[in-house]
Every structure is written in C-alpha cells, then in structure tokens.
Length: 261
Image (cartoon, rainbow, N blue to C red; front, top):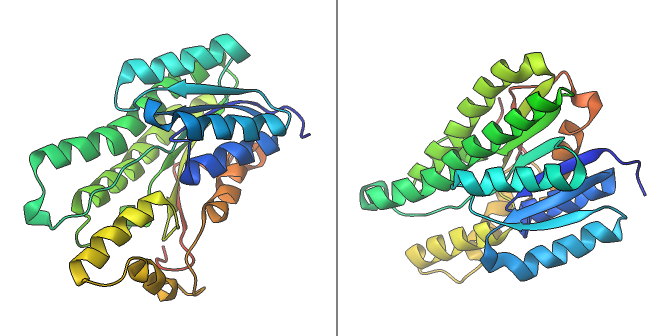
C-alpha cells in the first residue's frame, strides 16, 4: 500500500476515464470520493470497492456538477470525513453530436451547464477549501482534443472544452500564490462510453456497421491506435504529485499524436 497522500474528489468517477483516475489515485495513496449521478450508483459502488482493495478510504457521493449546492456538499463531506481536500478532479462531462444548425438553445445550455459551469463550480469550491487549509493543492479539469481544434458535428462540445482551457489558465493565475496548481488533461480518441455514443451517431449518419467509425479512428494518430482510459491516468497521477508543483495553467494533450502544440 502506498504512503497516504491526502484526499481527492473525482467527478464522473463511476465509469470511463473518471473511474480509471479514481482507482489510480487510490493506488497512489489518496483517499478518494467518487461523485456521480444517482443513476450510476452500481458503477460507483464498484469503484469504491476497487479503491478499498488498495487499502484506501472511499466515499460514494451523488450529485450533479452543474448544481453548486451539490458540489459544495461533496467538498464539505470530504472535509468532514477526512479533514481536508488535496485534489479535485473535475472530470464529469457529456457530449452531443448534431450539425451546427440543428443544435438548439436547450442543447447549448445543457452542454455548457455540465461541461463548463460544472468545471467552474468544482474549481471554485476546491480553491475555497484549499485556500482555507493553507497547504496548497491540485485542481485538474477535463478538456479534450476538442478544446484544441474545432470539430464538425460537435460545435458546442468543442466550445465547452475550449472554455475549460480558459478557466484553467485564469484559475492558475489566481491561485498560484496559494501553492495551488490548476491544469487540465485533453484526451484524444479514448474508447469509453462517450466514444460509443459518437460511434452511434456517425455510423447512423453513414449507414455503416456499429463500431466501424471507432475502428477507423485507429489511423487518426501517429501511434496507429485508439487510446484507453489507462493511457490518460499516468498524466493525471503525475499532476497530483509534489514533483509537478512547477506545472500550472496547462492543458496537456493525451492523444497519441493527433494535435501538436
């Protein structure tokens, strides 16, 4: 069992990249609170079990990241249970694929509410708690390759992920003096449930077999394969360490070489 490192919250931690991050942080020595929607209870419980297998404490919390009271309550619960908050992973996000002119204002509001406002709320309440503690901290958000370049059929999602980059840079500038670093990870093509939904959309549009669109993406990067959640977690793990203390305000690609900064 790794030496105890502190406490962490992972939003959207019941599945996909969030699940992989939560388990890795437990392996690294963090007690981990998994915050997700009530509909993900069974999956969240499974992640809690994995965290506890690594000898760490776990909390299963339910809430919507777009509701400020839910996020504040989650942070308060972690502080009450474990004495503080050291890491916030604002991972939760949703996607919607549709031509630009078919997007509705309701679509816009929904995506922005979760993907951008949700990250803002998580950053805000993590920062408030970390400033109060006076021992620094790590705040990390989920951007995307879609936050580095626009994509057809994904306009609002792209806008939210570009927005995460702006929030991350601004928060890094404000909280650096408190020893708090703020960074984001930008995954490329990662095979998760979110990618499955993209595949459903694209294969339906082209009348191709399900899975064919995802398979075609293997050639989209220089490494010649799609990514998996385990490809993302080493970066996030490192950003949570003391050794990463001089890295802040960055949105770092994990995409196998699709985009180059």
